[in-house]
Image: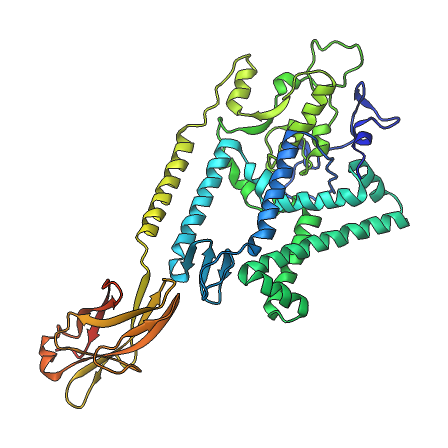
Length: 502
């Protein structure tokens, strides 16, 4: 159990930034005076923060991890012949199931639409409130938070972890480090195992993984996801955000003077200096240079240096600073979400109103609405039958002994309904042409297609010798027509009949 009281109280002999407030011995790993394109990693020991934003981050972490780990186990009854997993990426049958929705491989444009909406939503959130996605819901942030929580459980908070790392390899250090890394590997294994459950029935695959009967590919990807989670969340941490992720370098194009960003209000905090008991606050700023904001930052930056590429907008520095302000009885929000426009105005004792509705946000919202409307229209007009026609490539046509011409086609009928259906196949646009289906007897056979299935048929279209003069050169357009026997609905598909040039 972590003794937070010991972390808040000044250590014996430690310098004080104010009576009862320790001046933490910490430096920003990426200060504005020593910034470079790449630097050897300095390990960051983020201190546990307490406050509103830390509680929000705990809640978001619990919700997002809960969704990730539990979603594959939720059941959804779709009938006896379909999988009952609520969310399933069924690669074997080229389908995606999500509750009542079913998306086939031929409908991948719906996924494209969702990705476009997600990107535009990210742009909109960034324009309004900076990198809020990075600070709260990005998987790298969530799993790093989880790994730090595990590390803090075994090794203690910031000061204790630093003493442990700087001390000799005692039995205590060995078992605490060992327990930490074993716990990280177990978290990583649970993460990798949960991900493969999205691609196959979770209860079945779980039993197979334990008994050794799962496909080899399941073990391979579980191993890959385990190793990457352990390395990225437990070891690399902030390095992923700074050097591997492209978003920090793109974000500046999304900001403007009205974006809400984590900001240090220098007009109020400067000049900064430690505050002694009985000293007046006249002629100085509210910042006592305690460096609490630096100590809690998971990226190891000093927010007082201004807007920085490394800042993920997690707002833990706000919690840390507000706690200090309460203890020295000064107004809160020396560090706060604020806009550049308002910072400039407050420096002149004015106030700029928050402008959420502006050209940038209107543009993103409008494009999102347009894409959503297109997707909704496409879904509302979505057919429950797909028809695909492939003309034989070799030979293009066959001239029979009686002089008639024959073309071969592969007709694929995809039944998207959760029931077996019967169809009739015909053609329009080729008068007196004869249609025969290989493997089916009769002049007009019924074609049965099983539930959520595709049936491929070899179809031969023959034009008698007497009708060859009606063909329009070497390529004659016509249509295949598939009729649903249950309701009489028809589906058409264009095709061409090939023959010798007249």
